Length: 122
Image 1 (cartoon, rainbow, N blue to C red):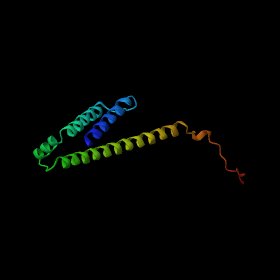
Image 2 (cartoon, helix red, strand yellow):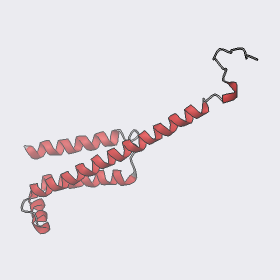
Image 3 (cartoon, rainbow, N blue to C red):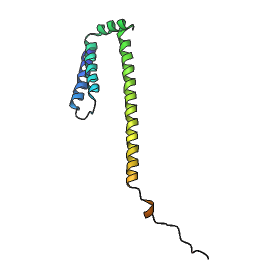
Image 4 (cartoon, rainbow, N blue to C red):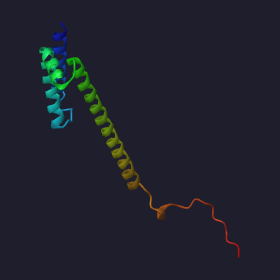
């Protein structure tokens, strides 16, 4: 039963990704990584014993532990990627704000003096 639910979830995620491909401005490497992740997910669902064999070959006791380690690394990568993207976006906004401020700046010659003038005493 769990295999059917996991396969349906993987297929739904793939369909969502493919349906929104025009909105997703992802690089080719990210798209390729998503496809590889989908294939690996289906492989792990259909043949869970193979994941344990791979885990043992890599020095991990159980396949679930290996999957947890991979997910931790993927989460870390996603978090860092998002942080770098937001930081770059904030820098773009700051540059844009500076450019708008400079383009709307009033030159000093056109600024009217608003201080009251006092007559000069001889």
